[in-house]
Length: 77
Image (cartoon, rainbow, N blue to C red; front, top):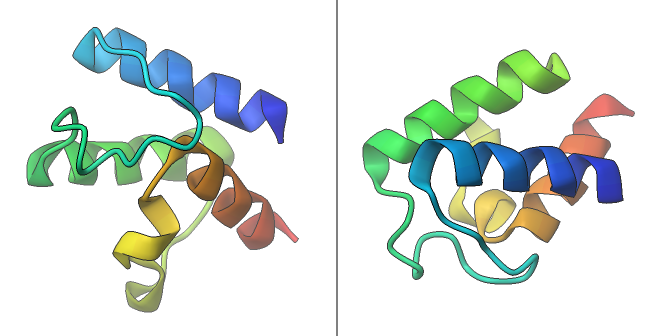
């Protein structure tokens, strides 16, 4: 899980020149807006070879780096 979090953190740093705590809410932080969310979904899909279903795209799955990593690992099972 730590490797997934690291990959996500590097993406956020490169794209938004920002760093997030693993449990910090990415939406409340103001770093990710709606377009940023679409870009994040694209990155996750490509980097982790995940296909998203419409029901996957809920805020709960993407609230923090830790929660996104958990979601990715669940999808990979």
